Length: 131
Image (cartoon, rainbow, N blue to C red; front, top):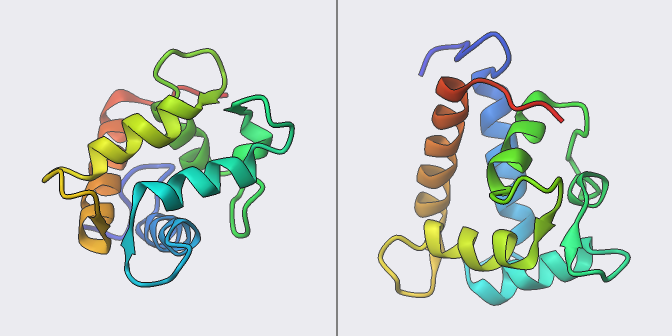
């Protein structure tokens, strides 16, 4: 990858985003994420316990930049029903099954990096959805 992937996404920003989010969702820090860890993160972020994440809830974890175009675009990518929220099924079930490409119930750091690299490239080619 080059230094600048688009006018908005910089290589360093992408690396920081992926690294920071993996460290956040790999709650036991063993280098492998399981669905239960992703579900626990969802429950933690869902401050009002309504079963969905607003953008403000999604960006409350350490290191999230609510003003980052990348963060906006990833949120919008995961919001498959386009209601402005991440439902538990969108954030936990669908997301985990997409990352766990071999169906072994584990997402390695390599799986995670590969998945998010594809998401970023998809967003670069689709344009920004905005928020």
